[in-house]
Image: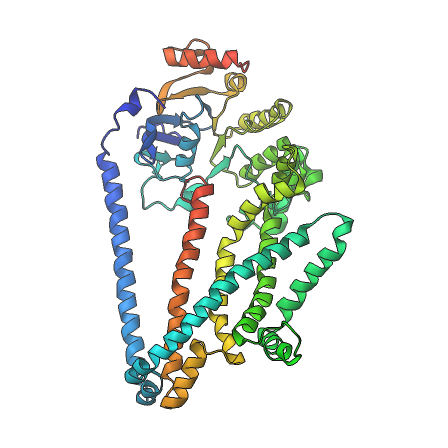
Amino acid sequence: MSEHQPVLRVRGLAKAYRGVPVLAGVDLDVDEHQVVTLVGASGSGKSTLLRCIDLLETVDDGQVWLDGQDVTDPRTDADAVRRQIGVVFQAYNLFPHLSVLDNVTLAPRQVHGVGREQAEAEALALLERIGLAGRARAYPDQLSGGQQQRTAIVRALAVRPRLLLLDEVTSALDPELVGEVLALVREVAEQGMTILMATHEMGFARSAADLVCFLDGGSVLEQGPPEQVLGDPVHERTRRFLARVVDAGRL
Amino acid sequence: MSGPALDAPAPPSALELGRRAHRRSRARRSTLVALASTVVFALVAVLAVTRAPGWPRTRDSFFDPSTAADALPAVLEGLWLNVRVLAVAAVLVVVVGLAVALLRTLRGPVWTPVRMLAAGYTDVFRGLPLIILLYLVGFGLPGLRLQGVPTSPVVLGTTALVLTYGAYVAEVFRAGIEAVHPSQRAAARALGLSHRQSVRLVVLPQAVRTVTPALLNDFVALQKDVGLISVLGAVDAVRAAQIETSLAADFTPYVVAGLLFVLLAIPTARLADWASLRAVRRQQAGGLL
């Protein structure tokens, strides 16, 4: 690795499910404080890529480095890697049996050994920022989708991750709730968090991303600044994908 | 799924082959460690038992091969009765349990007495020791000399077993029904299904899948408790072993009967493992966790 070391480096990543290849040689870098968005059709492997990076899947081939450490090495302690990465899922995946506050403080207290008082104070400060401090004792099922997803983002942030992975965090939300979640992501990005996010929100990708990667056929077909990839793509496939997105009224 | 990169899956890289080799060697080492520790443990256990001062007497009294061979035919014949009782009881238990569980889920004020009756049944028969129920049903009922009451200890014993296990299984089913998320009920009702239809077509199938491992666990418990009908005088495996024990003045026949019950339970235990694994595989996406 050269003098410049990205937070996340992916090289030649391959993954197949039951013989069906999903990823076939993905190369990707995410630098510190960078916001990188993954765009591409459903089934293009965006979620699989994120799951491989968080070691929720074993990769079939290729390597992933987090801060220069090869996390795909079988000798790596996967839990130690996951402790440095925050993940937010499409379906929120909040724990329904825990209150909002307990969802947010679970990892700081159980994994990172923060005391209850400190963990709760920090969690409440984060919840305050997203206007949910008043619902800290509520349970996930009592919140709206947007509130649940913002809670999930705060839960991921509570452990101060090195890298935040967002997996289509607005796909399960009403259009009117998408805004509040994206505003939070934007705020987190502006504070310098390093983010890799899969998304269908092209408008958001265009305005908030430093780099847009178009995933097609199991690899990154095209990547560059948003105005280039989304405005003037080089590849025919990218053009066709964007045309479909425009037709669907999402850009 | 299309694109140039996917058409020809590349052979794994040297790096990936190295990782696979590492994982394989780790797996081999785990197997070796497991093997070695098992052998050492078994050796120590065997030595400790056979060197113990009472071992020869224990062996003659519990593990005498010729007594075992003599007792086996009678015990096996008794076990066949246990198996038949088990088959009938298991079916009846599921029917009773499911019916009671469904009665407890009935909505509406009209059904209040039925709900209370069902709740009372589970409370009483889960709390009542099976042996007391066996005495009451097996000896008490025929003693009333009422018309139509069966006198066969097998039938009466099966009745007592069904009453007790029906109460347990009803609670298992009820837990499964309540574990189905309310949104499923809402989705079913939103499609226009009636309460009954939504229970039958949406809630119950999910509930049964959830509780299959617990049900199989209760089945294993029932498998051995069918041996309790021997207290009513039915000549089952336990009773046969008792007779053989008194004839031979040796406890080996009991051990034989016990081993047969254990052998009977093992396939069910494996079936329970398989059933819960299949449920997990079918309903959840892949992944390591």
